[in-house]
Length: 122
Image: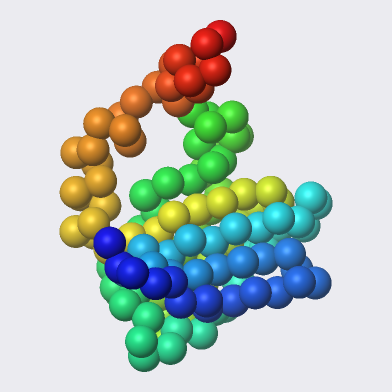
């Protein structure tokens, strides 16, 4: 794992936080009502963000209690990351290679409700 993170965007008024660590990007929209559509995040040279970036974890997935269809999106365009984030959402983006490696991880295939029930003794 990369030892440090790189802050890409911290916008108090929009209530959005975006940072990278290694070749992953973490984007969070804390606003209770406003979606962020076509939010452009400049990518500094030191950010190791791949051009083939894709969603690996989306809080809007049904397994996390989100809506049936994913509304979180991210793509690299012209030296910037362009994001779409619904209100109160989080998304993790990674390169195609990392996405493939994570898909083989048992935790990503696990039933989240079963894990929470086991941890809480419910």
